[in-house]
Length: 493
Image (cartoon, rainbow, N blue to C red; front, top):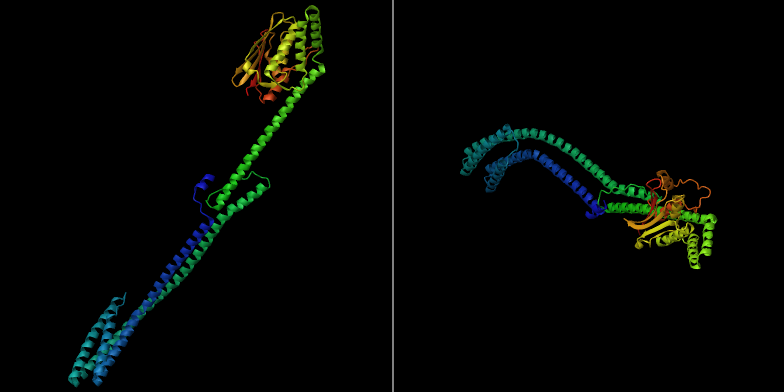
């Protein structure tokens, strides 16, 4: 949504308002112009209705003037009156030539033709009268004047009749045009009202389209300020300033949500690490406490010291020194409370010391073999991990075993892990016993058990906490008297 708004050309709110009101103004202007032109056309038609009557009235006046000019000249015989006659004749002839009535019926057109014929006869008689008057033929021009006067009466009567007919026809047209003009006025008013309503609706729609996103933005901003970040995204449909602000607001809310999720995840992870660290420390302290409380185990310490005393009587001091040195190293590693994390190399040295002491105790009856990849021994690991497993193998796997006893310690790479294998050829284990150990449901130790009190469950728990993974151990056994192999998996750094 963000990219689409940024890629489009933004139309500002000001541009929208200008375009909107320009369109509305242009529309109103066009409607008013059309109405103005229509009303003017109707007015012109109304004016044209009685133009024919005006023409007929003018023609009637012109024939009157012509008859008067004829009488004046025949009475005086002056040249000025003669000129006035010819001027009146020209005026009348022009008016008669312009007597055209649009839309006239056959009767009106017939009367116009009759008026034209009478006019021709009238003018011929008038010309004869003027000619006889100039020649001094009194009787002749007097007769012509009487004839002209008679035709003049017919013309006047025809013009009156034509004017009456045309007046009736024009009155009907005028009434119809009046009705049309009234309807046009009502229609114009309705059009203006419709335009105003349309403009009002469009203005309300435009205003709503601008204010609705702002109202939504304001409401969601209030929700966020109150601590509620679970608000829906604001719909962005336009490409104006409001759309830009809405898009930025949506991105801000999304970023805040992501930050909160990351912060929550980080805090949960930190709490988990702190909890694991506390649990591992508790497990280690528990193991150390058992060593301190038992002082390594009275039976084991008594037998070890007794063997040392016998060696001191039977052998030279060098051997006794070597033995006591291994015992001291072993006890020192066991009782070091400060060293919670060590290396695999140190753990292997502790196993070497332990097996040496055990073999002195049991007259070297336990064969000890190592297959170590020295490049993998620098890996860090919790302390007191390998020795408890070897001790459990000797105490449980070799107890009452008459055949040769053997422990093999191997370190090798396996995928992304360093594998540590402790394999014995002792009594072996059943699947039920393996499951008890892996699930921590080991039976309570019997009285006289010489183990140091640190079980495999404690070892597994500390490894899982230290490396934050569940897959740290495998225990396999082919069955009774087939030996047991414990494999630890240490993730490579």
